Image (tube, rainbow, N blue to C red; front, top):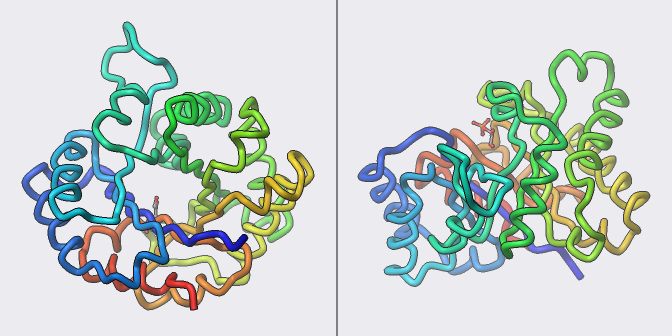
Length: 259
Ligand code: 13P
């Protein structure tokens, strides 16, 4: 079965609630029925989730909601954290985990990413597990980068039972391409995504690996989206900067409509 493309906007730490409502409304107004062929996901900050959820519900939107982080525990004395159940109740179907910014600034590891992903699956949410190599690693050669991300994926989903694994989404985001305007070439991105799928196939079997969606992220724009879309192992995009502009985000998502 062909994998349905997925385009998720990671708003990062941008937009107050009032600004988020405007952006969500603008995106919703530009939504085009042809985008029903793509899962279009908005991932605003925690504080905006409720209001963005209300905008989507009011518009009967086919777009869905995701968070950018979650706690691995169900409840309890974890000051400042938000549980999978809280995200579920507010209307999130998705949650980004293991983003390179969380790894770099908040010390998150593959192991932590894996337990967060499992906690999300247990609550019925889909984790979008991020991986990606540094510039230093890429400069050691394409093979070194591909080997690194393949093992990062396996470590970041260790402990997820086989039956659940086909539900996860992976986002390959080379750190050197995030917010820099410098994208991986479609061929480089495809080679890394193919290496990730091959590692998943060795680990969990080809059927599971074929079902998992793998996104590319890193300076994806309306102008380059259509270059990544035809790549056989790239099933969509995780978008930062361009997701903060309604027109850009919708035009970019249209680049992934199946032909
Ligand atoms: P940019 O699209 O701004 O490069 O960000 C990518 C990203 O980190 C999405 O999670």
